[in-house]
Image (cartoon, rainbow, N blue to C red; front, side, top):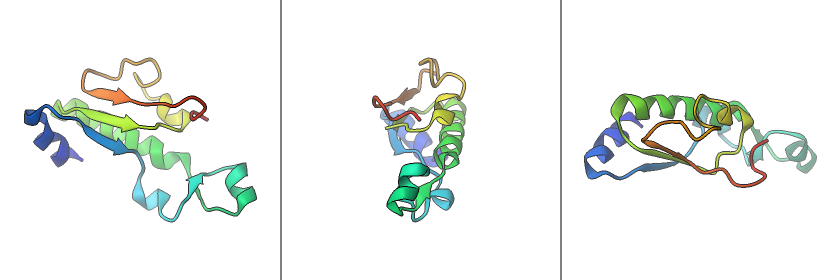
Amino acid sequence: MRAALEKAKPLEVPIIEHAETPGLSAGGAMNEGAIAKRLGARGIPASSEDECVRRDLKLAEETGGHVHIAHLSTGGALGWPGVGDGEAGPGVAIAVGPGLAV
């Protein structure tokens, strides 16, 4: 992600990402929880998104690159400084759909 942000910066284009940590989300089909359990689907723990968002906010700050975090879906990620209040920084855009934050 650092390399992508550094290469995109002079082009003035954002890196658009679906925030998840592959080692935590591998094989998952939906957010972990009661519905996933009831459906018999392997859930993805919220920490998969939360940690990725934390890391990428820091990388955007360090590189001066622009990151767009698409379809944020966990309350933990919304809780990182600046995310929930729209003050994450000049190089950060975050999309949260209605009803996605759990």
